Amino acid sequence: MRRLFLLLLNCIFCFVSCSYIKQGIDIEIINSSDEIVRDVVFLADGDAKIMWEQIEPNQKIKGFLDMTHTLGVDGSYTFVYLDKEGNKKQTASGYYTNGKPLNKKVVCEIQNDTIILNFQ
Image (tube, rainbow, N blue to C red; front, side, top):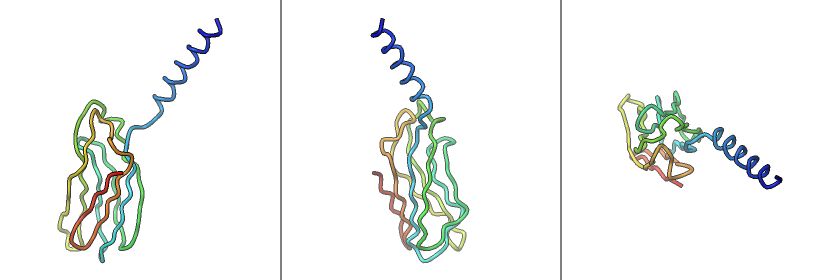
């Protein structure tokens, strides 16, 4: 009887804890460039995205891309922003499968002439 109770309790705990864990990836963006960047977006294929209005030079920001609605989908990530002239800069990298990220974190570094995405 005690074994059955412990098994049932364990099953309930697993069900409840898995239901409340959000699927996603931590994002850190570092603006190492000499200019303010605007309309910054990090997104997964589909409708999972996180946005920032602007990031100042030498500013570091953090966020979390919630991917709970991308379950069952494979895809990649895209990082987009506008430079001081309003030119769109973007890069695509990384991969997720079945809506689950393969990495826990991505560091996006904006430099004067390039964008570096480092998945960890």
